[in-house]
Length: 106
Picture: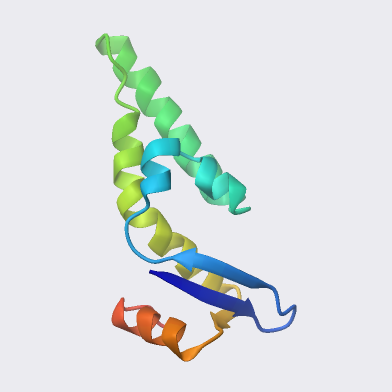
């Protein structure tokens, strides 16, 4: 499900997916980077690299994919919450209903 969010002042519209993030699972920090979410792109990328480096010191295989697995469950919710905190609001009743049903507050 996708929701449309519009900034109160600039009227910029962003579309965000609600639920599981397959793109984060497959592409690690790139979805956050392409959305312009620099903070979370850096957090996800550094976490994956740190986990890979740490586990490769003790094993043959790095476990950085576990970081992307965890973030694939939570990143879309983090992204929408950040947009809502930055004065983005639902553009239509359908988007508002989806966000309310998923437990978002605005």
